[in-house]
Each structure stands twice: as structure tokens, then as C-alpha cells.
Length: 245
Image (cartoon, rainbow, N blue to C red; front, side, top):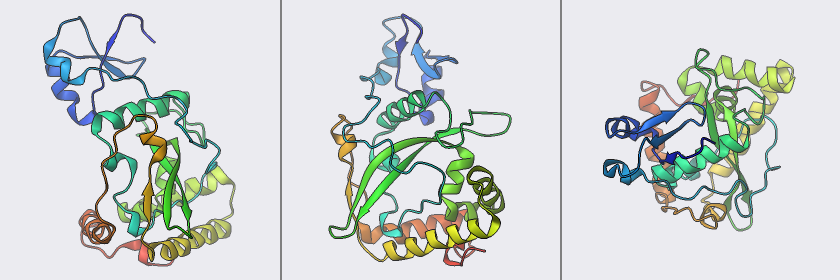
């Protein structure tokens, strides 16, 4: 890491404001910094302590490999990004990509702007049936191609199902029949879990000093998400209600 930098925590949505206030971008570290001390216009983005590379209680072996990883509809809007501030999300995202060596932890791909492939953070959850608890177990760095596969229902909405299907097969070595069976099983499990109301456990974040905002009430999540996804699909019926082809 560049010595002497006055680092900043600038959320992506605020990058233009920070740049206008005098912040500079370090291409190697992929992070904004103040070029000199005493720039009061940048104080709002003063860096908080780095998030530890291993979150308390995190299991980095949880959910290895590439698979369709659908979040139950009763858990929509409980993803980490919607439950933490934009600045804390930036701290988490930076830690996740750094510890992964800025490569996808599934396929090994690096970011490629020309190919429109990015590195993104994804949550791995476990679901405790007897207590109806959805627990965050791991944060993983995925390239946008692998991330699209995990959110296969959203890939259908966006019209990129064929690309997601091909990437799933390329990375896992599945035959077409095996991939279709895997997707069908993931949607069946999604339907089963979506019938329950789950309580959220984000302990690995709160124990790392990340402030968590309670998500919307479970009863409000499916309707709000359905409206948003319907708009994204131009009013087309949500494709994940179909059997996987």
C-alpha cells in the first residue's frame, strides 16, 4: 500500500462529489485519498479503521465452488449492502477484494473492464430450519459472471440466462442435463424456504464493529421486491416462477 497516503472511505455513489472536493484516485490500490493534509471538504470521508481480513465467526470454507444460490423471497432486502451504511459497505468490499488477491474466489478471473467483468461481494448464508434463522457465514469475492450464476432468477429477469447457464457449465464441468437438474433443485429449495419467515443473524458484522440497520419487516419484502423486479423486466412475469428450462 502506498506510503503516506491519507486514505478515504468514499462510496461509489459519492465518488464524483469526493473528486470535486479534491480527492484523488489511486489506481493500484483502487481507493480514494486526500492529496494533502487539512482538506476540510474531504473530512466527511475520513477513513475508519480497516475491517479485519477474517470477520469474527466467519467460515471461509462455507459455500465453496459455483452453484445457484437463491435467497428466499421472505429474505429479500436483507442482503448485507442494504443493512449497512454506504461507507461501511465500501470498507467491507475493499477488504473482500483485497484478501482474495483481486480475483474471483471461484473461477480465478480478474477484473476486466473491456469485457465488462467486475469483482463483486456476495454473501453465503446458512438456514437453521428449527429456529428459522438465516445466518451470514461468509463474504466472498466473485466476478460478475459467477455472481450472475448465483442469482439465477435475476439473470432470467435481465435476459442473460443463456450466458449464466453457459458459465455454470464452463466452471463446474456439468453436462447440460446436470446443469438443468441443479437449477431445478435450487428453485425447488427456494420455493420451500420462501414459505417461511426467517430471522436475520449478521453477528459476523456486528462483532467486527459494523453498524447494522434492521431490514424491512419480512411481510413487506416480497411485494416490494416483486414490484422492483417487474419494473426491471418491463412488466414481464417473474421468470423464476417458471421451471428451469
